[in-house]
Length: 313
Image (tube, rainbow, N blue to C red; front, side, top):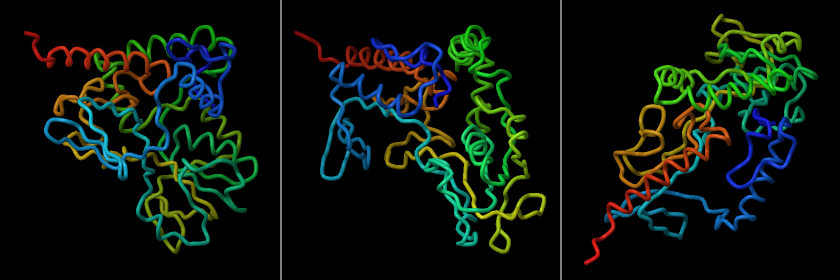
């Protein structure tokens, strides 16, 4: 389920079709996006995988198999979560141990009988831990990322905390234009965001055992920082993602993300990003933040087109 209720999940011209305080499922959100594209007859080309983005003679070239697209402006509308990040020692674990990354987790049927080690204690790891704890012994390895101090579905959250957090803190205060926002951004990009739905006490009551950091392998088993080796038959890597932008053959990548300011790449004129984590504000990866980020980039493109338009004689 989304972490934001329906009142914040609509797009320009179409509110989300559900009660304002309802938290949509992933499938309901996907249906809404399809319906949105159909309603406004957006020319979306599905099933086109981009192999590379280059620039030739001042124009961008997008290569997709045998297909070639050229453009004066390119907006890369993708999140940072493209390629699963899994430590190298995963390849050395006993082959009898079932292991996979959290992005392919669907339900408990994917794990075998025996203990489960979840490496990573963010939102994905915590929600998977809560589900698996009903049928398996679960160990969770990873640093505490913190948590929001209220229940997002509670009455007080609906009418006070969520409007305050989503519309004020995440959307207007935690931005790249404020000192506190820039400080929060550094922490979010390196450590991860706080737990939203699950609380540490929920994990404790569910019997989830917090263990130290997973650092390697010994005798085919995962090795923890304190020297212990939990007896598990499953490992789920909730260890985040690489940006997955190696197909961009242009000088845009920084240490952790593309170099940009609010989605505008100053080093490559005409190139833009939307959807990146904390692109402009904490809300940039939420549905409510996409409208503002998109408008900013469109305005920039229109202004650039005016500046570069040939003079009329």
